[in-house]
Length: 441
Picture 1 (cartoon, rainbow, N blue to C red):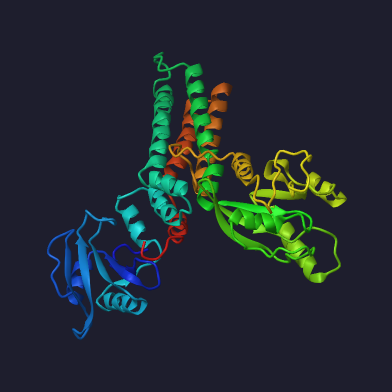
Picture 2 (tube, rainbow, N blue to C red; picture 1 turned 135 degrees about the horizontal axis):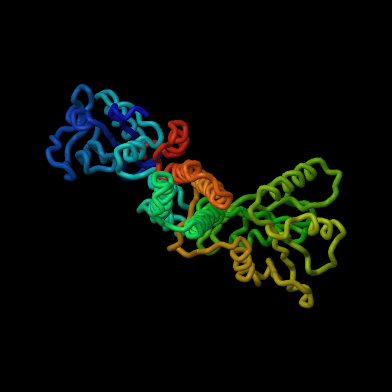
């Protein structure tokens, strides 16, 4: 991304609405605005009412214009926002007018990229902008907001500060090997490194919860035909999403819908009943069911409490991973003596609250809004590599390795942490991160 050009983009969502915003950022933003807006933008952070004019001075729209002069803006550059009427055609026409007057089209994430490049935020905070936009639940929004305010960055800087203290001791051992000065004992340094390494590993381990929080949870309903999977889907969604009939094999394809369980966004999948069949269409549905089973975060195996288990069901139970499977006895309104923790009646809507509690418990989800979670795989990989480098330092201390070799591994550990907040990071990684942003942000 060329940060020397003035960029322009529609900053509001596509479609029709009361208001739309066309945003420009760059050194020429104010001079471009002077070519197309009827009122001079003299003061920063003040809204001016006027007309947006075409190349022949015809009126395109009546609008508000706001300038935010550098460095007191989102990007750290001069920004001009044109608040116009929210029709798709007029908004695109105003953007075209900005381009005619000298701006260039902004790439996805270009505005936030400039904010990062001008030091308005670090890379972890920049990633939080997209996380906030994409949040599917109140909890996801809260954690993204905390990350935008620097929660991850502060945690990383604290870890770095601790490692800088250890690095200073190792450097002293290298610089003053014969002085006999006791900077710190070998045992104390080893203990401190182990504690820091454990802290980094614990931080990396929050990725599972962070990923579930950010991306949502995929639940897959599986089971034999007519055990009540579709009825359970309808009961959980509180609407008639799936067709329910007494005929086995009614569901032939994957049915999908969204719901909330607690603070989590959940993608719920209803699948074709698993059984041996010669029917070609049903075979394809069963094949898709097995694929969905593999991709799901959690499998809800629905069993029919009104009858004994089939041989295929017993085999299926043995094949599933216990840590990602919940066994659910449905139709308990037809039989009350069934043994099992999760007993429900999808038809009557009983037992659903306990089922939701069991789902949240199964994924070990912690809804503590104050805990700092990582949601990006890039962060986890950096933390894992940082901890691995510290392992080499700890092992070297135990084996009596010369301190100058240990400082190299310690610096490497610090570099991996630094990359989380955006220093010493490649252009390819930056492009990959900001390309996921929407245009206009």
